[in-house]
Length: 116
Image (cartoon, rainbow, N blue to C red; front, side):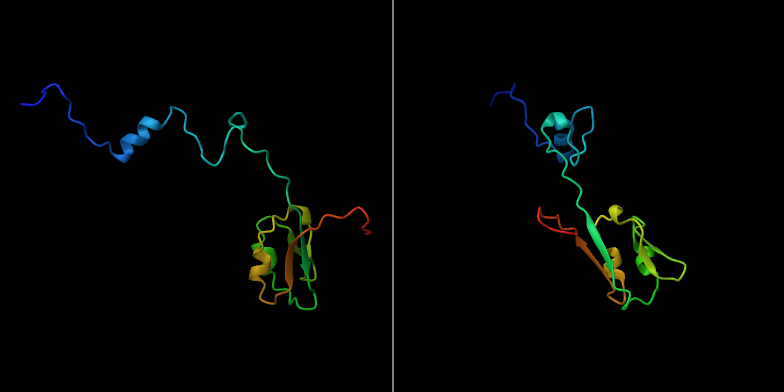
């Protein structure tokens, strides 16, 4: 009869395969160490927030939805961009404004010959 010393092979479960491949230190796939040749981080993009006061009714939704607190309400109840450099360009304020009174756009880099 056949070779009795031959071992029967069994398929590995996905869990077993992962355990064999993994190392003792868990690695986050989204974060690579610099030694692994990760790309250098990109420069932060800057954004401009424009509020069209003629359209705004001062509801405060833009200030409430801004995750970085770039927009605050002043004493008159009008929105004011207080920290434009913190803006990440998420557009929450623009999307949630019922009056379409806010625009968030990437800031253009000034060319050599541009004046202020």
